[in-house]
Every structure is written in C-alpha cells, then in structure tokens.
Length: 114
Image (cartoon, rainbow, N blue to C red; front, side, top):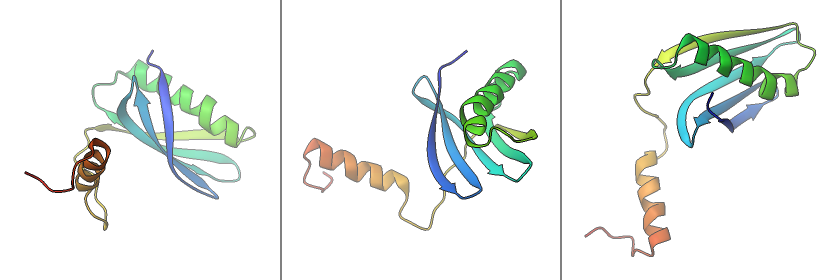
C-alpha cells in the first residue's frame, strides 16, 4: 500500500478539502462534509486504482482525517469518482504562469523570457 499524504487545501466549520499524494505524486482529492450524525465525502481518484486500493484509501481517510475530526459520527458515506484531471480553473491568473514566475525568481532570473 502506498504511503498516503493529505495536504489540506481549505477548511470551513463543516467541511475540509485535501489533495491526496502517494509517493510524492498527486493522485486525487477528497472533500469531506460533516453533519451532526455523519460524515460525507467525495473522493476523486485515477481510474487505474483497483477496488482494493480504493477501499484501503477510504480506510486511511476515515482513520487519519474523519475520526480525528469527528470520532462520534454514526456513518461515513463516500462517493468515489474515478477518472483523470483535465485542469484547474480559477478567476485568478493560471497556476502555470505563477509557477513559472516562482521558478524564475528561485533561479535568480530577471523575470524576462529569452
């Protein structure tokens, strides 16, 4: 089983969103929503994960994220989406441009492209 790492993207009083990493690669995300009696999650993973891998990942999410937040919940319901990422969309500048600018700053570049 891979060594999963969960990096929180955001949190509200009743929900959390995490990027899921395995062996330093982003492999998916999970959005968890808490109600007074249950926790509900939407899990997005690649379609290459086997049913056993998905079950193991759900167990990790339950143990490491859900139980630490709400140990007295009555149920944990997970909807799994399997597929591929097609992009990340935002009203801000595209992420790729920001990453390129950061790389230039780190490398000591002058900010101009050749």
